[in-house]
Image 1: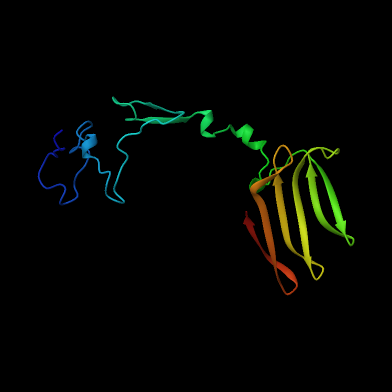
Image 2: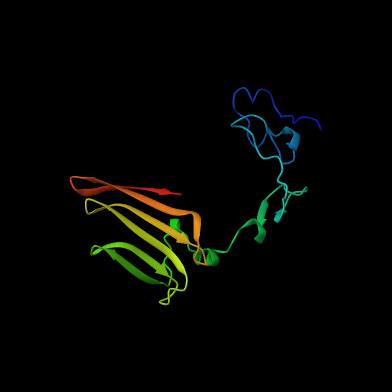
Amino acid sequence: MARTQLRGGDQIMDDTVDSADIKDGDIGRDDINITSTGKALVRKLIAGTDITIDSTGVDAGTGDVTISFGSSTGGITPGNHRTLDQLVHEIAEDSYCEIERSGGRVSSVISYTDSGKSIKIRSVDYARTAGRVSSIVVKQYDSGGSIIVGETLTGTITRTGGRVSSIDWVLS
């Protein structure tokens, strides 16, 4: 395919190239920069496993393009997402909470699916130093009540002048 030709004289040198100089269909795939950092464009979209592409162009993946993801790509509906227990979302769910104390102070709060404590959802443990809460460890459990790896959130409390000034949270 021949390179795109611009009409007129020195428009490129003096930055006067406009829509009158380049018409629809004048620039082809071979004319698009895909190698220069900061200037590269997408040449063509190609569908992968469980991904479909609808496009208006002459060739698939060109023109106005809509990309759709199938269920095996891990995508879920917003409604299904809302029902998931995830620490980072701090989702409120129907639950029964049990509060445990040590020395008269709250040491943990455990959330279960029901008052029969059938399945553990989440636990929050409080550690104290010199009688004050120094860290908070929140653990998330799966639908069977087993701890979820990567869903433990630890907050380390910093105090200034005896008051909490910050909590540094780390997800592990």
